[in-house]
Length: 126
Length: 107
Image (cartoon, chains in turn orange, purple):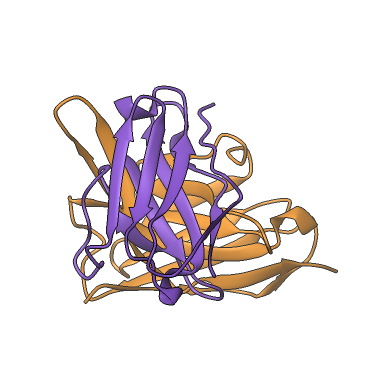
């Protein structure tokens, strides 16, 4: 059974870089079928997609965060990582990693997140 | 950028049918998915590709998508279905977009 586990500091100072890692177990991150992504949820608010990566290293980022986000993959460790630079209090959130399925039907394309990590809380504060 | 709009809240009596809508420009031309999130838990996929249910999701959950609106329908709503629900779609420009979420209250 595939499992995803986020890890990283729970407290980051303003202006510094937030760094998180997602470890994939029970399956290979190098599967050609899936993509891998980061989603966050500020306290009391909705879900916000941060970005997605393929095992080859191809990435897609939320345009509102693109200038500060880097997502990378380490296939040898079955992990992928998130770096968010120049953080402020507005970046305080639960950060979750997830597996994404992409595909196409007869006339339209899709993606969805079928497996999620439990999430990790990151607080930005001095 | 592409946007999805959901009502902030929906209320339903136990055993009745709950409908949660998700609106976006020509959303019917895209596939929609739905996630259930209970307090303190990660989201769970309940509908994908408009109408499909993942293994383990009860049959009372169903979805539809046409025109500008996707709808999540919960038939015979149970107390355990009380949660936040998020719609989600793929868009060529936005890539992954979520709706703002709907709090379903069963009372």
